Length: 190
Image (cartoon, rainbow, N blue to C red; front, side, top):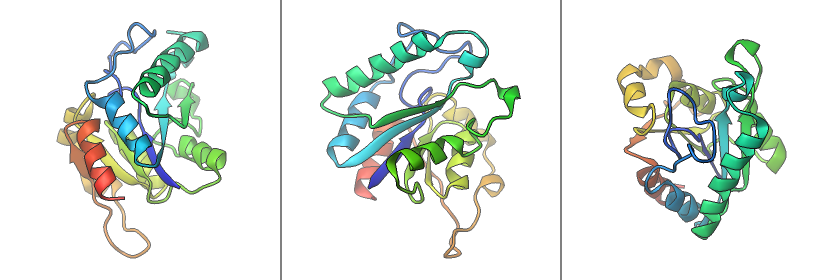
């Protein structure tokens, strides 16, 4: 299985410091829907792994989240693509759950759902916590500059999150302007 894991806010859709709370506020980043469709058509199993602490903060409810995800799924399907699954952490950051990135619980759930390993899967995110979750499960991290990505690039000290793989090579971080550019890399380097 060729697996690609995507963060949602800041990678697929525009992010907001006040949270994306409804389907109306959920606005795709230019080129992101087509990028997901291209990955899907190229034979990748594309899944989303997203922290949604707005639920735990009571900023929106499960119906709102489902409406946002329905909109995303329909847009991808309209572009002749497919999202194989959406995995989310509903908890408040203070809950100390196992599923909130940077912890690897969402990736564990993806592995269990698809009876596969996420090792060497591409993981595209815009924040340090995305990269940390990817490295924890030996995924291939990709940072995009959309969302919080520009800020993350400036703050990033790769020695903090990148360790050596089993073969002793240092895991490298690929950085791209957006999901569309990252998709070109993924398709050409799987």
